[in-house]
Length: 370
Ligand code: HEM
Image (cartoon, rainbow, N blue to C red):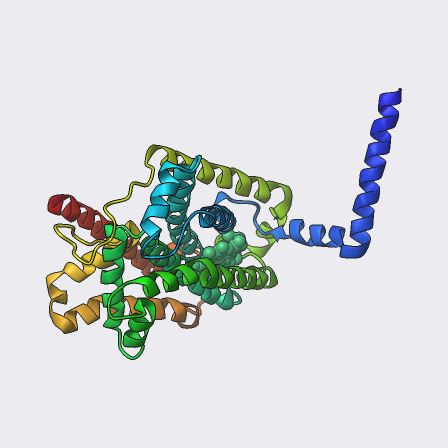
């Protein structure tokens, strides 16, 4: 009897606290707005990629902050402090490896999310701005990978950055300025590591948080695109709310990705090479795997010489990004069914095949060189 009274009192206290906060913050309205968003045509696994991206990013922030308690961004201590994290800090190796694999997972997810919205025709009117802000987010995710790669200051980090900055240097107009700004001197050194560090831990996270907020605001304003097949009446009849079915799918997808990243960190932990030196010795510089296809593109014979390199490194990728940005304004037909958009379907298959073939051949080439 007493127990029942107690639990009654406890729930009373809880309700009072909720009411107190609700009166001041409008908690219940926020909750209703967040969770009662209609999902036309019902919940789908395909819609989970965006939420998974947010989830991975939050964990990258958490693990990144923990790493910063030990990491020292200087040419004298970056390598030693990273070794200290791996060998001396309790579970430091796991933390660093989780952060490392988390960045790869983010790149994979951003490609999956982009593919989904492209194939579903979700970039079309009225979601043009959602798509454009998404493209900026894509750039930020790739920039995170590039700036983070230098920080351990081993041979791999140093030489990938040298190659990356050299490629950047070739771009017209801003290339020279960007390369000098990033390097902060004639050769990579203290200024380079300081600048990469500030960009990696302050500029990019702030930009990602701001733009992700804008992306989701614009997405909520336009409403979810829903499936590409079915009449408006059919979609309306099948409509679910974000809570509980979509949120459940999102949580299962997040948990799966989390377990995959943990397993990769556990079974394939980060191992550093020798400390960075201005002499590569017999080390062949190469970027992180998600930049390998660009690296391989540059190795093609047709991109020989100064002009060829400019084409492969800057003009082609730049033109591709410009085409993606212009896409919602060029492709104005309201048709979203991918099976009735053969050009889009074939273009997507070709781009994916090219990335796959170039990445695999870069890996085969690397194994051959080493
Ligand atoms: C850090 C990167 C990103 C985050 C955190 C993010 C997050 C999200 C979230 C949570 C949604 C709503 C649910 C969903 O459909 O998944 C969404 C929708 C959307 N995103 Fe992203 N996104 C990112 C990158 C991108 C990129 C690179 C693009 C394309 C260039 C893009 C284009 C879109 C579009 C068009 C929608 C609307 C989908 C629809 O209405 O069905 N996003 N994003």
